[in-house]
Every structure is written in C-alpha cells, then in structure tokens.
Length: 302
Image 1 (tube, helix red, strand yellow):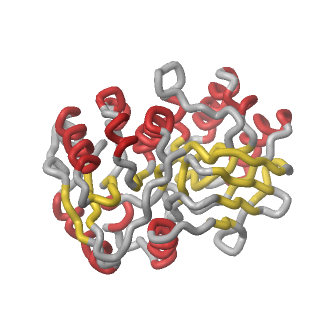
Image 2 (cartoon, rainbow, N blue to C red):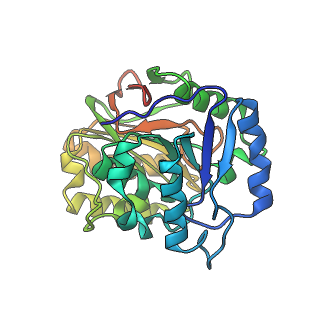
C-alpha cells in the first residue's frame, strides 16, 4: 500500500463534500480547529453546493475531489460529512491521478465507499476519522479526538489501541495479523456484487454503524456470511454502533457469526458516530490480540 506524506504546521489542507449537502454556517464553525494546528484551509469550489440531498451534482463533487488531488499545495483532504453520495462517484474518479499524487484522505460513514474504492484501485492508505461538519464543528468534539487525529497525521507513529483508551470487550479469543480494512457496515454490504466489493481475505475487518437496529445488523452479517466474506477474514474489531442500547445483544449477534469460525473479535473502539471519535488508518497492517484486548496499528503516513 502507498502511504501519504505526513502534514506539517503551515501546510494547506483541502475541504470537500463528496456526499451529503451541508450548511455554510456549520462549515465555518470548524475552521478554528485547523487554525489551532497552524494549517491553512482551501475550500472546494462546490463544497456548499446543494443538489437535492447531495452536495452538488456528481460531476461537481468529482471536480472538487480531482482539483484537491491535483493541487500541489494541498497535503490532506478532509470530507465535510457522509450521508449519501460517495457510491455514485467512485466510477468517475481518476485512480491513476490519485496514485500519482498520494495524499491524506479522511472521513467515515458514507465515505467508506471512497475508502474501499481508493484502496483497491489506487492502493492508497486512507483515514477513517472525524469529518469537518459531522464532528469538528460540534461542541462535543473533544481534546482526545483532536489529539488522536493530530498524533496520526503529523507523525509516522504506531497506534496502540488498548483499554487505556476505551473499555474493550472480547467477543472471541484469538490473535490475528493482517491489513486493517472496513468502515461503515451498511455501506460495505452495499459494495457486494459491484466492481468495488470489499476485499476481506486475510484482513482484520473494522466495522461501525449508526441508526441500525439489531435485526438489521444481524441481516447484514448474514449477507457477509453467505457472500463468503466472514470465512476469508483473519479477525474483526468493532467501533461504535450508535443507537444500540443493549451491547450484550450486539455482542451475542457478532459471536453467533464469528465464534463458529474461530475468528478473533473485539468490540469497544470509540471510532465512528461517537465522541470521543478516534481516527484510524485503513490499509495498513495491524495485529489484533483479543486476550490482551489490544490492537496495534502501523503508521498511516510517511
């Protein structure tokens, strides 16, 4: 996998809206964060456009993405929010351009479709982490989320995710090594049968989601099972599943699918639709040890 270069104080980062529409006033609330890191910000030409529920037409959103990739001043690209729309543009992206100009790309939720397509088509490591409007602009965006993000983007350091960060629960005991892939469960399931289908073979799969009831999560795991994805992976880690009140029930559902396969699995990462929201690189190698309740992740930048 290609690692993007780290960012430095004084660099310029780009902000785009590849999925759902945003309000300009919400965007403006987040700019202080980049100033606090001594970063300059360049907004995409169509970042606040609205086309129905989307942030501009497919062509406008692709144009902003390509412009940020081409611009030599831009060192990282932050997405404003998820929602819906990323899957509509992945067939229009210039993956050779992305490969020739590797940059930090960060987002989550619907942006999972972009992560998956870029990994497979451009072989580039990307970041599952806080977005400009969905997270950074919120009052709940805290010091720990900000520090974890800065820690990963400004320096090539290994990330050790243990109970020093959040309470972790073992679903099935074991140890696994592999490339860390994944993101939003419902988006990943929607890639099955497409040219951008998630590749889980030999991978440690990270999953999170929001607003999905237990029976829907069960249904999506069942689809992954029948598609042969669960058999292929080496292990699984779960981030935040927003809206689930009974975590024991969630654990039981995942255990039902993973324990018979003897796949190590762990839940409790504060990553996804939550605060604090800890970012993680996708596409790098990682080691999962559920007995030690630990996930060691290689650096996502050079």
